[in-house]
Length: 358
View 1 (spheres, rainbow, N blue to C red):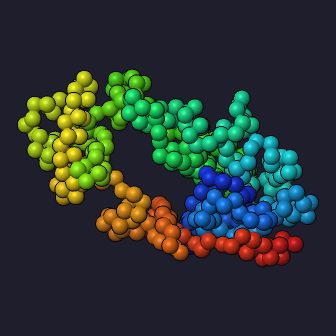
View 2: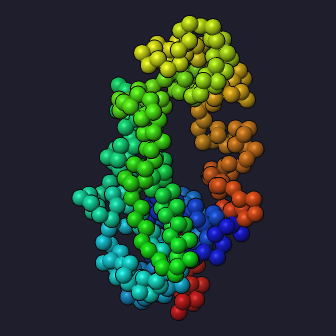
């Protein structure tokens, strides 16, 4: 029983961040009722984001099914939807209608552009949202177009996680006041908010917006390097004591070329020299030298490699189900641990909920 046991959430089927948020809340013990359309799936999902949920098939163009959904919403704590602004209202399920049935209902609306603004009704995807919000700007070398890890910065970091936080905050308010509300979770907003740590560091440093000049995308001591066997590792020795540890372990403590950590003019040459050094030995050599130290270095793993990494394996951060790798529930709770529930077949719980809310 996770910490959200007893919380009932209706999730209208969508793609990407909304179902990820539903999975997260189900991992934490919420009863998440996924409302799916009749017929085949979209073919874009292996089902991981459906884990731990109940599946009910409803035709939202059918008056009887709409009436059933309204009865379910009247008994729910929250509803998640990821459609374009206005679609829920056209179905007769807008916030005014739902709050008339259930004043304490929290309605989480997940979009890229938000419920308002010039682009609110425009199509887009993760890379579009984070490009416009500024969150993509620093993701790459200064002489190359930026490229961020797909979905992580926008759909999940700026979208699903902000939706989850918004829902939990609104649920807390609703339990104290009896008043529900709408959570407008826009990926452009969340990804812009995620920029604050980097903006803070830039403001304290050079204050420059130039790619390749910030403390986290320019220096030799915060970069990725390729090793002799074609495998990659990262170093992130930001603080002076960690930088000294890195240099000591690499045999560079007395090298005058590395005496100045923060001289931006020297960064390109320092980075080139480190690149040459790391390219001289396979990654296993550098791991043996740097693992377990405060040099702040780590191998760049594929997901399957990460699952076998001693640290992640010890924490069971990944697991396999039906031959597919899944990330384990997070974060961890000492008294009410979460769990990755079974993946439902489409519509398998329809009869139960139709009977319950008949």
